[in-house]
Length: 566
Image (tube, rainbow, N blue to C red; front, side):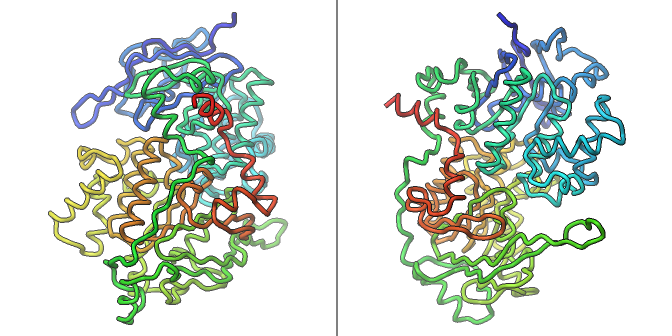
């Protein structure tokens, strides 16, 4: 029988934090076989990413391997010198990190970063590397690889940045790919393309994949073996189908129960007939505040009319080109309701949200907030809009100041708008931490000391600090494991019932959208192609693109396993 390509035995990893040693991984055993996908699942902080990063010794500076072996071919990676590791990383082991913003060089074009891998490992000359890089970007699913190669990371959407990272990882055609949440930022159609490509590598070249994911649907559909981690330990492992159909550990059963499904819809309790508005109105007229205080559910909070947003692209052939990212978009978001925007990466979802918030100016069109035109808001009017409209960004690490403690991060909006005193702000922060399932001990930690999922919960708590009328949620649960995801969605629903807050909810996860949204708008190439209630839109989609999105949803094996358990 073929030996495992990667064999981990009794691995223990710890971190030194503020003078204390925190044990992150305890006695982990794990095998990855050639030509197979092994998925590691578990909650945020369970040790999944630490285990994966220990393989290539890319732990944080305060992390160390305390015990165990990591056999890769004839090498024990746990004891290799740094010089020896450099011959393995990139060439024989490719890594797709969780966070593209901090993993891509912001001052280098995307093509240069892919070409660098080819040159370093002697796979291309300086002249041929640029051409080869475009081919690699194309294999990674970038729609216009030649254009992407000339762009910088900040010019790409989150999903496109993630695909660029995947291109860097697969450039040298490694024997093993460690993929740490490789599709968490991707819409379902691009996710399918990426996973299909990774799967083809296992079938054609015998490439092994160690897949770290919180998406049980992806793990169920793509992995031959499933490893479940909790508290730094492996609590269950085996063939994927066996684990899903007959989970032995209580923790595994809880994870499966929390996984969202398109087959179930949570009953949405209507919002209260009235709700206090704690913020000053956007317009200067006092009557606006009174109207807001006793809102009717059918009163629009936000109206977008014929929005257009164009961006200038790099010149090609001496010609100036523009990209129409948002093309004649019209939306209505009512108080106490959730409008979901779904569509592929680059479809214009996040740009539309930025226009609504006044973070970008439209090329043409109009945005009304609470009946007031805020399209060109500035000065005091823009500040009042900021008070009533908050955002949870797709990438929590990039939106949290690394110098601040978590307590300072969450209380920052309260300080900026001079809400309360020091004691009341601290009480508010503690309450918010509790509501997003983080312990009070998190207060003194820094963003870099938290996992990706924990950072996202901090970002949500900060957005809720001012009790805003509108929260734009840009992929707010994409970085969360299923159990915490369920808690956060319940929190958002509870806040909406209690306060009448409206959500503009951007997501590629249609199971999440079906659960939380009252109305769904499907976007493609900057245009809204279909709208409707989620129950109707998902049951009888009219547009071919909507049908394509639904067909790409992962988790068929997971749904089948749930049915068999019943």
